[in-house]
Image 1: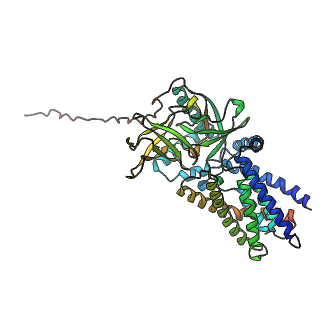
Image 2 (image 1 turned 90 degrees about the horizontal axis):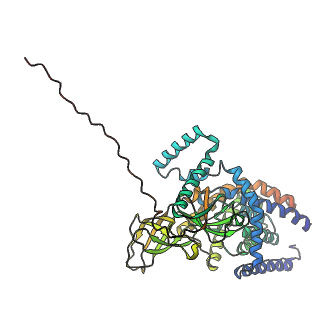
Length: 307
Length: 173
């Protein structure tokens, strides 16, 4: 093609560039054909993803575990203890047990608030090549899931339904940089906007500059009209750092999400919101300190014989 | 000849796309992980003539746009990959230091991987795609480059043999 085909090669390149620009324009204008094409691909892919999830389930958390291993000693000890316990009890049911535990916590959370939920398993974690944070679940429109529904983890908000297919759905995680949710601080009821940062931390911008926020404050979702995309009262996270810039128009803070996005195995999609706002009832309980019983020994002198 | 090449190359791209979406995506790899499809396309582009590399990039870009994790508009990856494919081949074409040297190709692919991701970020910013904080972006770029450096040498023999099989070149390393 090089020998005498320079013009043809250039024409080919121009055609391909024009085609790409044409596709971008079509997508930005919201043409349904492109969306249908993507939906069709996901419908075809979901059985493969499901099979991959089943086959790779025992090993897929390996890298995540390795990453988090050195963070805190207590976590390692806890994991080691749990690991040893699980090995003794049910070696082959490790993942099933973990998912069951997550599911129980999710059901507790949903039951307290009166959410109607559909549970789903995570079948794929989105690649970070596009700098987005997504997961794919094994339930879709056939299970009553619709676009813009709240997704819960065992600890609180996990994300929102971005796209729905017959047997799977794409979830935009709360850690995604494009993710935003209206939040309020439990107790003081101050409101603000929480934005994802690409990891487990998020930034909170309060709407009222006269209010203050402090480390440890718990954040809950404010809720949306008709409970979509967000149902009210879902725990989001807690304030880990307050940014005090003198010239800032509104106070900002760094938030640590309750949900650990790297270990999501089971999630719940809220298909029906609560009849009334659950208020602060979902605020996670602080761990109770159990008093250690102390033994007091009183020494009584034995009577001595006196002459 | 062209029909034969396309008929063999298309299932290979499809297979790698399915592996990426069904297997690689199962792992939450530290540092953002890697895209086997991206590495594959860049390796093939480095071994091909510029116009063929552009078509390879175009095909890989279409698949990457079809991925559920693609956050930008459909066609963004297509445009970037076709330009990247053409550029990587244009720079390296005829240079035996790259073509006949496995280390040269790996280096070329890793550098191209980095610049492709940067190009995605820049075009994403122009198109209004949120990409996260600066620190997170730097970490992800660094992580992806390290993963590319680790994965490319392992996959290189397979990718070059597949390329030689289809394009009948002497590029198998």
